[in-house]
Image 1 (tube, helix red, strand yellow):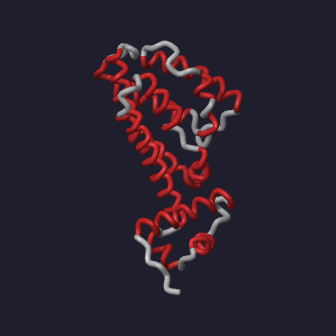
Image 2 (image 1 turned 180 degrees about the horizontal axis):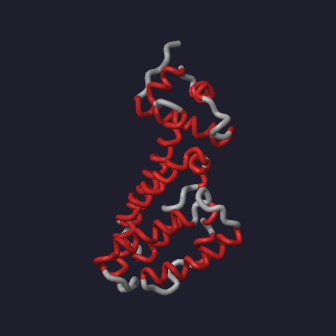
Length: 213
């Protein structure tokens, strides 16, 4: 039976989905290119037409994850029924953390051999999210919920994202659960101080995502 030709983007995503499924079940290190092509039912030549290596698969998966989260954030921002505070909570608690389904990406980036790539992706994440969070903060200033200068709202937002991203990254700091809990409790007050509000994000809400950073 002749092989059915697929759209290149569909084939690429098919290979990527199969690889991620194998990474999650077998582990990144224990998954080979041969395993991936066998699962998809294509030749190794087809794999290398779309991806240069297994490492590129992981990088592409991270890009796709970030893109999906930014799409979520964009929809939150465009929702006129939500206040700035509601948008901030949704983005920080649902859009910003890496989803559980992408835990294999974090495992890959947290490997010591990938430290440079890890830092690169942290910077990319912060850079991508900052304009969106800044827009939310500026809305909050206009609503009177956040009390800070409009001119410095971008820098304040960026500072907040950098702090959350680096301080709570388990690949950079080997905090114990007790230490993480204390830091998230402090973060509640830090967010209030930075944005000039009161009880903006509860400790319990931050604790819900502590294992996903």
